Structures are given as structure tokens and as C-alpha cells.
Image (cartoon, rainbow, N blue to C red; front, side, top):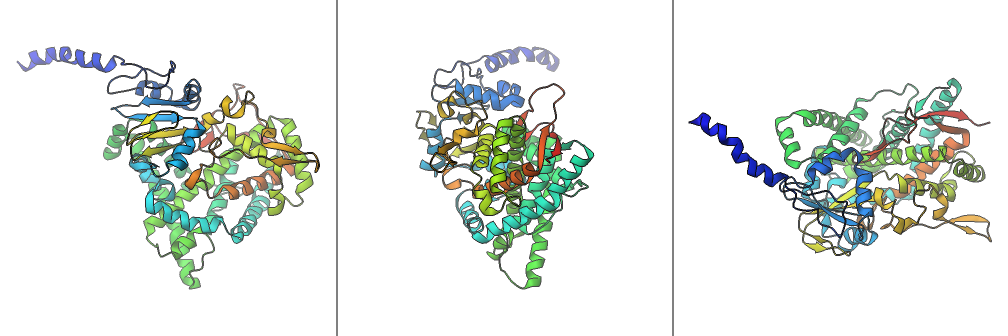
Length: 502
């Protein structure tokens, strides 16, 4: 009897399969025929999965063909999400209705293993407390002076000698790796008073750095997979989740080491004076090791990956635009004497514009999402239900003709500048943060924005004044691929040769 029933079992499945595989229309949006079909239960997940590797240009194309620059799509299991490149919507979710759009439980759970309750994974009072403590460090003149000393040391004692050696020996360097090492040493020294010595002539392999890369990649991949799938893998400790558990353990071990060392230093000095961000957190009375460790990991992610990503694509663009390089060199030779002091860096207007233009095309954080804690209607009429996520697509926004004009595809720093004829010099003209949310906007706008520009302009001034960075041609002759997880990278690294200027 059982075997007979088993033989007929496929017949019972046929109606269910027909129901699942029969599309019931496009994902809802305003007259956008390019949106993928949506099916019961699995939604548009097949199309999302198919386009995963190409998701940034794919979503860019979708929002571009929407009359409102906003689309609503079905993921799976009834979950819908919104993607937008509309500045009015960005202002709405990041400022006007800030209290409605938060990181949300889904976001926090997805990144909990890596970031814990750190500032970039926190909402409410926890976020406010960390934000308030951090803001003191980023807004003081003492920090700027400290940053200048740290960056100068790292630049002239480590980065420049490595480039000089490579130039003399005519070797090929992975400049992306070099810049990540530079940024990693910088954030550890600035934020935690700890020198990992990752940018040394031997270019040592650091267990933490490799583990951190893997942890960021796997954690980011969770967002595009079916939530139950990665949760099951996590529960059973299999596949990528098994690897994530190991690398997160390595990351937390490293962060714990920094925290314990700082505590010993402060005990030995018998002072709670804050010389860096970590000291300030410990001095606040929050000596709970997990809480402080979460903070260390969050700021490592922000300080290491974003700055290095921005500089990687900047140097690639400059290497392929000789006229821009010429203008930057002209400014460097006029403004920079020893490499780029604080005041000198502030005056590097054209370089600042070139960095903004580079991040417009290749933003270090290409997308960011917020979760609605209550029902809402966006300025363009899109309805948002409680629990839905709204993603503002920074990468797509840098490619919108409505924002940047017909020449949006061109790398043109001059779009950020006006010529002061009387003074015969450039004047920087910024874009509002809702049309250019590279550093976020509203209450969560990046605290380290000024520090990041200062660091980047010092690196640009110090490197280009002495070296010409030549991008090596790829085997297929194509442009390098812009890939993103939580932050962006150049796929396959950035191979360069450096030529010392006369």
C-alpha cells in the first residue's frame, strides 16, 4: 500500500510546482517592464540569484528605467524590498523620517556575528551613546594633529620606501593590497593606539587581515541569500557559515588582544585620560570586553576598507586620465612642500574634487539599507509596509542623468568646481548629501568624513609628487571589475608599476 501511494506522490506535487513556477506578474513598480517576473513563494529570487555577480549594474539599470527612480521587488517567502536612486527618497529615509527607518532587526541579525552591537550595527540608545562618544574624538583639533602625525609616519617611513624599492627594482605591486595595509595601520594607530605593522617592506601576511576579508565577504553574502538558508547552515555549522565561524573567531581574538593591551597600558599609567578612541570608550565606564570589542571591529571596517577602496579606484582613474593627473600635479607642486601638511591638504581643492568624482563612480559603500519600523509612503508614492527594507543605491545614484547630466559617465572633477576668475583659482562646489550619499546623510552622516579626506589627500600628495602610478593592462583588456560586499573592491587586485619622477 505504501509503495502504491509513493508511486502517486509526484502527481500530488505537480499542482504545487505549477503554482510555484507560474509567474503572477512583475514586481510592483511604476510601469517598469524590465523588472523580473515574480513567482509565488520564491518571488524574484531566481533572477536575483542569477544576477548576483552583476547586481550593481543590474539594479542600476532597473532603477534607471523607472519613472520615479524607485522600484519594489519580491525577494522570497513574501518578503518585498525597495531600491531607490531618488534623492528625495534618500532625504526622506535618512533625515525626514529618520525615526522610522533604522538598521532594523533583520540587518542587525545578519551582521551580528561579525559586528555585534558596534555602532554600524546599532539603533536607538546604543547607537546614540557610541555616536556621542565617537564625535568628541573626530571633532577635536588634537585628533587632527594626531592624524597628521600618524599618517605622515606611515606615509614617509613605510609607504614611500616600498614604492621607491618597487620603482628601483621594476616590480609589479598590488596597489590595492598596499593601500589596505596602509589604511589598516592608520585606523589601528589613530583609533586604538596600536600599531599592527602590516605595511612593512616584507609585506607580512597577517592572520587577522585575511580572516577579516573573509568575514566581511561571507557576512555581506548573507544579504542576497535566502534568510532561512544561511540560518540553517549556521545552525548546523556547514558550508560558508562554518568558515565564517572560524574567521570571526580570529577577528574577535585580534580585537580582544587590542582591548586587553589598552587596558594594561591605562592601568600602568594609572590614568583614564583618552589619547585615542578606544581609550575614550574605556574611560566612559564601559569596560565590558564584548561591547568594546564590537566597537574595535566596527571602526576597523570603516577605517580600513572604505578609505583603501576609495584610493584604489582614484589611482586607477587618474592613471587613465592624464589631463586630470596633470592638474593634480600642478596643484601638488603649488601647495605641497613636504608631502601635505594639514593646512596644505585643506587647500588641495582640485584633488578634493577628483576624489569626490572618483567616489561618485566607485563609492566605497555602494548600497545601504534601512528597515521601516512602521508603515510609510515615500515621496514618490511608493508604499512601504512595516518590516520592509528600503535600499538607497549609491552606485546607481552616481550614474543618474537627472543628477549629473548627460556626461555622467565621464570622470570629470571640474563638475565639482567653479573658477574664481578674480583670484585665478578653483573654488569647490559640493553636492547635497542626499544626491551624493557616499558618506550617508542626516543624523548618521559619517563622523570620519573630514579625517578620510585628510588622509586621502596626504596619500595623493605624497605619492604623486614623487611617483607616476601606471596601471598594468589586464589579460582580457577590459576594465577592472567593481565588486561589492559590505564595502567595494577591485576584483583581482590593482597591479601597478611605479615610476619615480625626475
